[in-house]
Figure 1 (cartoon, rainbow over the protein chains, first blue to last red):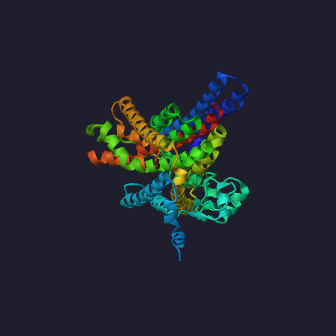
Figure 2 (figure 1 turned 180 degrees about the vertical axis):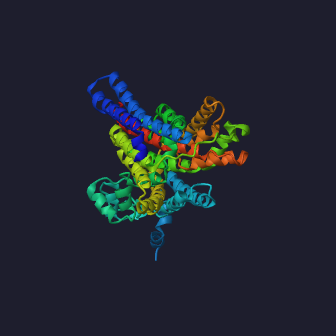
Figure 3 (figure 1 turned 45 degrees about the horizontal axis):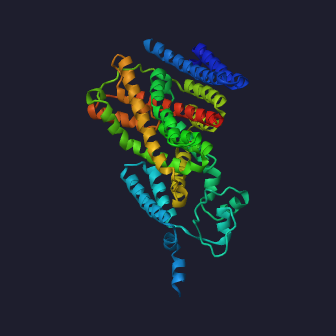
Amino acid sequence: MKNVASNARFWIAGTAIALAGVVVARAVAPLVDGSDRIVLTVGGQLLALGGLFLICLGVRRRIKAAAKE
Amino acid sequence: MHLHDLLNIFQGVTSLFDSSWPILLGRITLMLLGMVLVYLGKKGILEPLLMIPMGIGMSAVNAGVLFLDPVTAAAVTEAPVATGVATHGTLMMAPLVQKTDNLMYILQIDFLQPIYTFAFSNGLIACLVFMGIGVLLDVGFVLARPFLSMFLALCAELGTVATFPIAVAMGLNYREAASIAMVGGADGPMVLFTSLTLAKELFVPITVVAYLYLGLTYGGYPYLIRALVPAKLRGLKMPPHPIVKVTSDEKLAFAVVGCTVLCLLFPSAAPLFLSLFVGVAVREAGLSYFVAFIDGPVLYGATMFLGLLLGVLCEASTILNPKVLILLVLGILALLLSGIGGIIGGYLAYFFSGRKINPVIGIAGVSCVPSTAKVAQKEVSKVTADSIILPEALGANISGVITTAILTGIYVTIIPLLK
């Protein structure tokens, strides 16, 4: 897990953003009615997927840095 | 001995001529189609692992129709059968039986019924195939090139998204439209899962159409590539990449986080996500005994029985549905649109990268792992033998599996809410 730990910022931020997206889509959106509900559901899902994408970016960054060295 | 006794001995033939004209023609056509599928599978034109059991199952089930005894007939039709009424059926499977008592009776009569009831109709077999796909996937390709992989995969979902409104316009309801639109994702287990969840009454024709067309991608997509990408661009060499690799720790951590987040987000598709990512996790954790087990007996066993059950489900009276023609048109449209979407994505990547990325890799965004990636590499190699695009193509291919699984989750979650 050395490479994960050395890149912890991206892993923690990505996971936190993804979980925040889950909370918005699954917990907050059902409390709202009408079109706001759809907006919150889709927004939450995109935020969650964005969190996973941030982790991918972190790994890509590490690979690029390691390649330069 | 009377003629009547002779006809009773050869009930396969007698029941054929005792059927109505559409069923008679349907049975003969499906018997011949089954033989053609076996031939095309043996020749390698269609996927042999799936088509050979499917083809022989299709021929056998349409040939093996007999007159059921009154007790079995009552269990199969789930209604009392009057004396003297001849009910047609087989001793292979009765997919439409639902009542528990009838099901318990049929489980003791039809030899494939246990596998159908306990592994097929609940989606287990689709999940086992997905587990096998997970073991074959290297998510490192996605982690190394997230922008390109995800972008191409999203573009290649054009068919999955665009076919839905077209299907609704052609008269299908939302559930049926979403199920047939999933063919555009080019992932058999996900079409099976979606149609079982959303359109159980049409899952047989939808799944059969999906698997038949998926077999055709290997033969059809090269023509699409040649039609849309000129030879000069097909032969384009990709820029060199750093040799540093994504470690198995990173891939394992990503599998755990990704699986948890996606299951939280789309619980209806959680069995599929779990199956995919448990395969990835087992591979990256280096559990070689599990990898050998999932990669061998589980994947090949599930594929074999999936093909056989799909073939046996193609009994004329089950599959002949007025909507089959619409499904055939929509299925090919979905796959065609996804292929075109992927190539459009490839062109956009080509232009945005300053004409460095080979546009052919776009087709690999269609998630038929690893067929579309192999097709892309093959077409590029035909023009420039030393041009290697496989790593980028595999990244798009694996992202395609993930985006298709996400779209499955979106459809099975949102469609039941629509009225």
